[in-house]
Image (cartoon, rainbow, N blue to C red; front, side, top):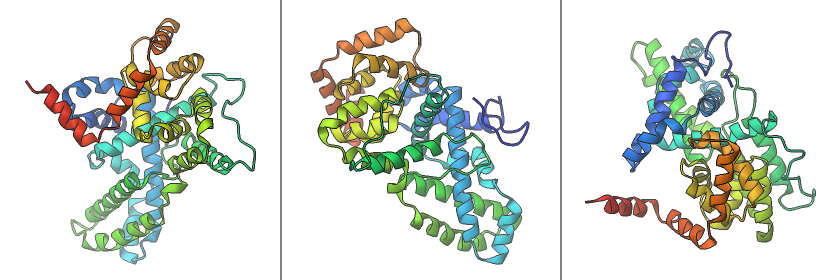
Amino acid sequence: MTVVNDPGRDSCQAGGGPSAYLARRLMADVRHSADLTALADGAPRRWSDGLRAEARFHLAAMTNHIEQAIVPAVTDPPIAALLARLGPGYCRRAIERQLGVLSPDFIGHLRRRAAMAMLLRQAEDGRFHRPAPALEPPAPDAPHGEALARLTLAEQDWRAPMLLDAPMPADLPAEPFHELAWSVAALLVQGCERLMDGDDAGAVKMIAPATQRVIARHDEAAGAIGLARRFARALPPEARFSLAAAALADARLLPFAALAECETSLPIDAVIDALLDHDDAPRHALFRLMRVDDATVFSAAERLAPLTGGGRQDDEALALFVEAYRRVEPAQAGRWLEDMLRPPALADKLALMGAAP
């Protein structure tokens, strides 16, 4: 898998340049977490080459989208002229050289988004063949029908051709959207400052309100995650389990996560993190809570294996995964859920106390 832009440039598989910057920043994000030692050791396994390529594409494409929204909103002629001198795509090139402006939370969101998109892309490419989609469109008058149809369109945007210089709608939740928007604004100010020999007052005065107007227009409910929640909440409870298994069979992690959120109260982010965990136990517990059948578990484990940092991915390893899953009792899965639903601050303190001598 490659990410393409100008001929001979910006290949995501290259050993240096922007890809190397991204690789180092992505692996460094875990050093911000409370469980520093354990996760830092596992960091290289968290990011396969394909996942890093997908993440880089999404970051670049969403940055392009926000830049293309902010720049025309700057009406001051001198600052607009400076922005024109920076040229299109300035921010996506600049952000790859300064990934430190992105918080660990944003990097975590980007990883989850990239994983969901990567599986959609693999399913579309036929790498994991199914005769027909399991998550069939409902009847037109079904209350969740419109949300599922709009969600499907949003997911198609996520697996657009991987061109670094093309925009992708930044259909992010509010917090990561705000972070990326202000990161783009800061990069634009920095670029103008360099052209003005260090004077950024005029750029800040014009770019800041333009960014605020872009943020004010953002509707997180219209994004893929908002649509997935709307779809899940419109379903009767008795339909959640069967449709969750269908979504998982189709490698559509987002609707599965939204349905799991409705059923377990575990947030979508936590559900996706559990699916991508390097340990099998969170996946086993989550699948048991959502009553996923053995065949779908086998298929899901096969698709997720390249993203989880696990070892073997052959049929024997997958069979062992299913055998271990069969031994997980509902009560065991319930205890895992209770631990996951603890307030994060409390869980961190208890973990630190448990690790104390």
